Image 1: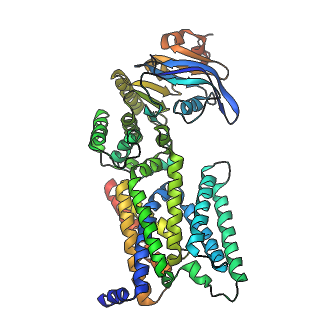
Image 2 (image 1 turned 120 degrees about the vertical axis):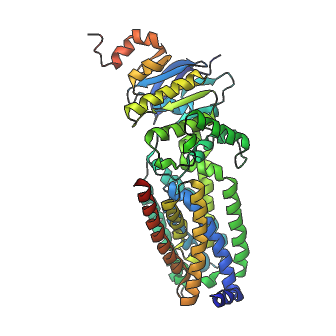
Length: 235
Length: 276
């Protein structure tokens, strides 16, 4: 049973259809990379997966006991956040909110989940540090820990390595792969083609009027990959 | 010093002002942290002008001031929130438009009522004797409601202030909480306005948050410190106003300026010593 399955999904952005008849599915344990040019509808698709945008046509189904608010989301960072007075712990534990409902304050169970995820990402010693004083890579780990507090099943990462230097980027990809091996399904939107084919098990490549979805090996054999490598392979 | 304190406590008018003032300062400071971080501080300013207009109109029409001002300001708060979160319209110009319009309507209403004893000066800059016995009960109840709601929803307010898109994605209804913050701000402004004056009330929201953000690094520390700064500056400002016979609202804002300067220096020293 797949975690997420879209059937003829059609999405629009400001009354323009950006995605038409998209079909793909994500099974437990998959590592799916969504690649494509700017304006191909990646962000719109992310919003739809998170339930922030209603499909114009088709459907998104969640299976295997996954609820829409159980997707651990790692959004692109905003400028306001970079100067926000919050401790690492406060940010991480805010990921537990989706299981709290209306009840105020956090319980010992949630404090435990937060501590466990900080340990998992190696940021336990940063617990009381201020988020705004951290480096870009550390901030990304904090947001990843928060996302893991919101889910045990699936992560959705929206261009997570933007603005990170190559060393930190490689480290971050290693971390994601580790989390994926631990049994968390990963969906990552990225511009980084080489990382996508290196780490992902499945690729969803979006173009203006069509798309490719399949295993990474199939993707490398298909025309879609030539297109994104700048067309130099076909020459 | 003790004489001043005992004098203040022997005058019912001053005791009333002290009670309402401390509660309003607390509410304003708590909400202020979120408003400043969400870049919504101008909404507070806009609302205070709308409040002035509503109070002036209520006075002319001989209606209870709070009963008119609270619903009007709440409606304005929702409107301003809509405008500033909608990127298509120019949020900041919309706020200026609404606040100056409300100010103009208030001044017109006031001038048409010549002969009536409305002191426009006390509306604009606040007056310590404006807090009547009936107001105290309403204000205390409203302020307590604001405080309780804030504490109850503290974790959610943090989450939507820090990262609205994440909060939304994990199933928090951010619109409801944004409206809740706007609603609480509107109530706080109306109760504090007559004491502080509509020109100065937004300083209660902005100053304590900015001061504590200079020095403290976690959301909780910033929130607690803002509340403390707000209450202390209110009490000190009111005492100065009593001793030196200066306007209450302006005295409090001046104390805030001094506190901001101190926190600015402390923050600069702390961050420098960390780097070296």
